[in-house]
Image 1 (tube, rainbow, N blue to C red):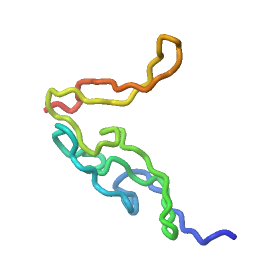
Image 2 (image 1 turned 180 degrees about the vertical axis):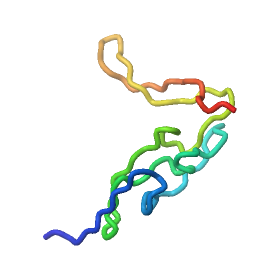
Image 3 (image 1 turned 30 degrees about the vertical axis):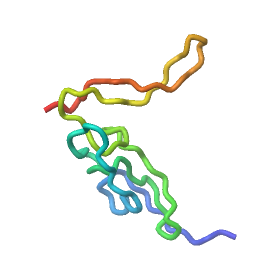
Length: 102
């Protein structure tokens, strides 16, 4: 038996219901400033059912889901996939300079 639903589609973090059920991310490490795109939430709902509160979420492309950005000269970690010596994909952490230096 299906349950009643009222699905809302969101196009970005400023839409109504885009941040329903999402907590602001805690600052971790040395990241300096709240992300200007997601306001520190790191993600937002692209779809949310207002009856059951089930949602599909989108990670913020500006802060990679961290909610905070680096504005100084520190390197920023980002998840990446590389090939091992055997040719298989393996997860790794790539360190890149911040594109938000002030």
